[in-house]
Length: 374
Image (tube, rainbow, N blue to C red):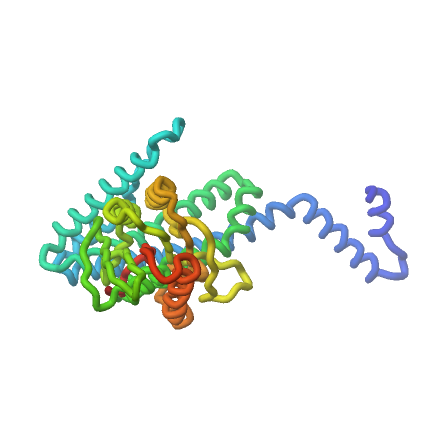
């Protein structure tokens, strides 16, 4: 709209002062929006990010407080617990160089093992009078606090940067991601409460299925924090692997599968059970199947399992129980827990369909075993 036209509109008719005032206000609004509109919008976006940042900080501090209280109850002095929690929340594992991807899996495996060993030794030094179960739980509680701290630091970084540089586009991107960020933060807070009280979480459904198969049978440890049992149902031999519970463990399923397949040369089928993220609109607790190693993480354990089954040409099936990210790391709901018996029956159906009345099947229950025994 040309300036001359705007002036004419503003003048209006002499006998209509209200129209003149109204048109003048329209022109002023147009000028304000044209000149300062983006700055006003940036200010509003930054205010919303700041509010979300405050909520994340509260959740981080609460998770840290729970961890410190847990360490104190386990015999650690309050000042020492606070100092260790602060140090743990800044603790990082530096990824190996990936310019040449050949051999990166063993490097990652080594770094993860070194990190786990260090944390376990430090917590054992702080709490010498308690058992492994409580130590694993407080370790995972600290991990939840650390992840919340990482989210807080990342959002704070982009908030301060966009505010300092008046960068509208960066602020807009963070604002667009806020719903997912807050969902993750709330899920981690739920995980912190679960680890504090030792409650099973949704991700433990695979371990729960394996526990149903293992219950009442002799077990032995075949890898770090990973148990194995063998039994028969008719002419079918079941080999079952799960992480050691009821403390918070994920174990080493890759090493366990490798050990079992080396000992049992004639395994006809491998079935893996794990939690999987659902899409919006899908129902929690739905079961779906696929081909391949059903296991999450950064890929180290998955790589080991795939290597072993590929080398021996063993068919591998995956059974996935759908849930949201919040349900996966928060206390297990009834909907998820009720799927355990259905999955056990489905395993027997797959065995009958693929193997008939005899053979050997390896079942791997994947997931965090907090609150899930065997």
